[in-house]
Amino acid sequence: MAKKKLSYKEIMKKLEEHKNDICKYGVRKIGLFGSFLRNKQKRGSDIDILVSFDRVTFDNYIGLKFLLEKILRREVDLVIEKDLRSELNYVKDEVRYARL
Image (tube, rainbow, N blue to C red):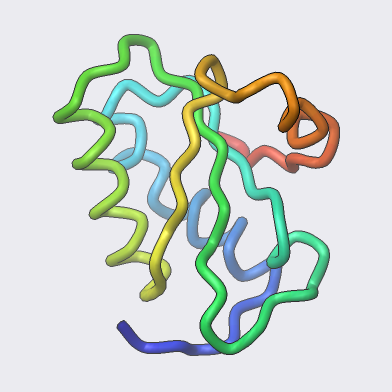
């Protein structure tokens, strides 16, 4: 996958531009956290995305992951909000949500 340097604003813009496609997977909310949010990404960093679905299914999860990787042209670490382990709850304070 191409490793184009993306900024937080560019990622959020791409998420918002593709909101109709994203919502087809039952997404209630979607946001960015991690190194790209803090502008601390490295050349090989993946993009950390937190998502909340209306209904979590394998097809929704995989379909959304593939869509995001196509849109962002990077590997995506897609984390389901309700499955977030307690030691990672800080992510909920850090995440910045896109407008869907």
